Image (cartoon, rainbow, N blue to C red; front, side, top):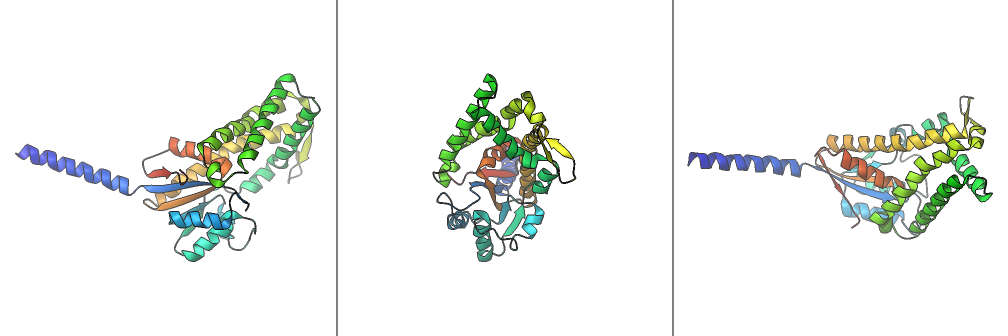
Amino acid sequence: MKIKYIILASFLLFYGVSFSQTSTKTKLYILGVAHDSSSVLTPQMLFEILENIKPDILLQENDSEQIANYDKVIRSTSNEQTATLRYLKTYPETLNLPFEFEGRNQYRRDNGMVPTDNLTIRLLDSLFQQNLLTDVNMKIFEKYKEATNALINFSKKDIKTLNSIEFEVVNRYRQNLQHHELPKIVNSQEIFANRYVTKPDGSTISYRDGYRLWCNFWDLRNNSMAINIIKKANEFKGKKIAILTGVQHKYYLKELLDKYADGNYELIEYFK
């Protein structure tokens, strides 16, 4: 009889601990958003989504300085800013916090990633149109253009589609081409080593080196954002958090949040 009581007590203790751990998990709602208002997503639509979730905390794709000036520097076309300012006014106890890589924009400019990113893509497209790439490189860039066009077609649909697995598959493929395959072209054709831009400190950087840094930053940035999200999930354990991120980051953040999962949070898809 005594053994039965011990077993029962052990079961209740285990159940209680398990229930406690489950009940205190932070709920992470990750929402892929279009940053600018359009028929795909408007501030009103985003506000209604937030109303349905009722998050305790908003995590924004901004750094701490941008959040500090969130209600001062207004972007009239921004879905996130317009919708969340309204949500914060309606629910003033809600926390509005950053999860972006600190100093993202300045970091990219200081290191010459901007404007070499766009200049490199433009030059690649020009060489492609003039048939001046090698056969191998022509095929790589053609795949990139096809994948980009597929994403453009997706972007004309609706926000639920942009949060679908189908979009994530195409987006992952396209981002891999942009950040891991296009550098093969840039590294193999000398023209990219002989075009330069001037950085803010007055030094120069080649398209080749600037584009390589920009591609590497894609991985660094997403990892930094995922780590910042996990820190907030642990800091505000048991709370409900809405993560507002550009749709092109969503697949990467989901993969990292699954990879680094420590049992303290639950990742929830809002769109089913």
